[in-house]
Length: 205
Image 1 (cartoon, rainbow, N blue to C red):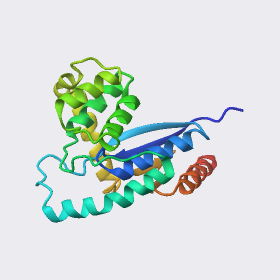
Image 2: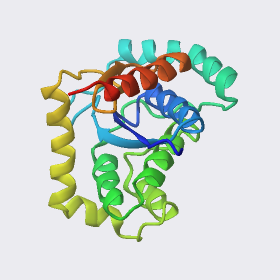
Image 3: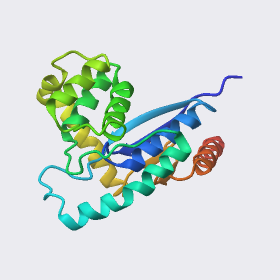
Image 4: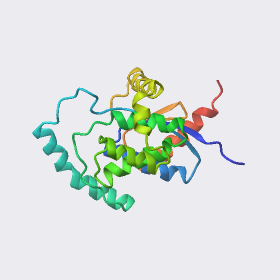
């Protein structure tokens, strides 16, 4: 009997390395059992945030070699050194626009990979426009998304939902609308979370 796809809601930000890792582990889990993944916006640096100071920049840089080694060992991919002070608002707005065009997953992955594997400036309009076209969207998709009230409402809804249920760090996962898991946990924890959420679904009431 075919297993029904389990819904997994994920709050993430494109500039979060652990969100990339979480996506890669979800992809591995999806190869073992069907998943219905829904990506939700979260902004580690919302509009109006002050520039990253020298101390924070140095701390981020100091952790990157360890992060790069871990990703290389587990997934066989090389992480770049992307720009640190990057706004993701426009990327999130364009992602919501892409979702309504049936291109949301392709665009989401394209942005993550452009930033973390190619070191590209995903806050730049030209870069986002190129990624949109590569994902199957029209050339003026970014302009459309920035003018689109539905996209802005969708981003605001994601941020509001995260606040309402106490999400203040990413990645955060919600399996089957039952079980929450925070952080890019080891793959075995993903497997156990999905199994536990499935058990919870089977309970009466």
